[in-house]
Length: 241
Image (tube, rainbow, N blue to C red):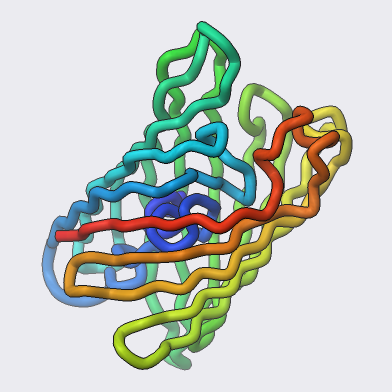
């Protein structure tokens, strides 16, 4: 199941929507540039829910920065929804937007993302528009889909992120998000849930390592009877160039 929202999610929280990517945040000055990343996570969690049945995933993407605030990119990951033989193999996201900074130092990022799923006969694709503002180390944002995953109606996502710079090129990131569904019978026996994460990151040049605690307030009985929504500790490694 994105600026790459999924990029940041994979690198820092092993999944999840954080809506700002390093590509977009740095996209205001200079000329055209391109970057790529390749990584692995012990579990791909998006908005607090495992997309790989608790297993590991290889992920990677490419970002284009036009130097004037505009950016484009794509990102892909293995997925495993455990539906049986008719099973989705991987997800690929396509996104673009505009990011910049107001004269008072407040940053902004607006864009569009399309989530495509491959390998299954199910129609799981969907689209979102998103936006965020950043004040120092605090980011507030939201996303909206007119017809969410597998054709399940309107969806709203609001979130807050806060990052701390630590010694030795380390960082600590806090995240909380609210998932609001149009239909109560969507995936869970509720029309909303919360997801959260706590991520410790370490940079070694182009290599980013992370350890994250990611979870939701959804019980196993409300999560397909599975443990996909339970809090768990994940690890990730991504190389960017």
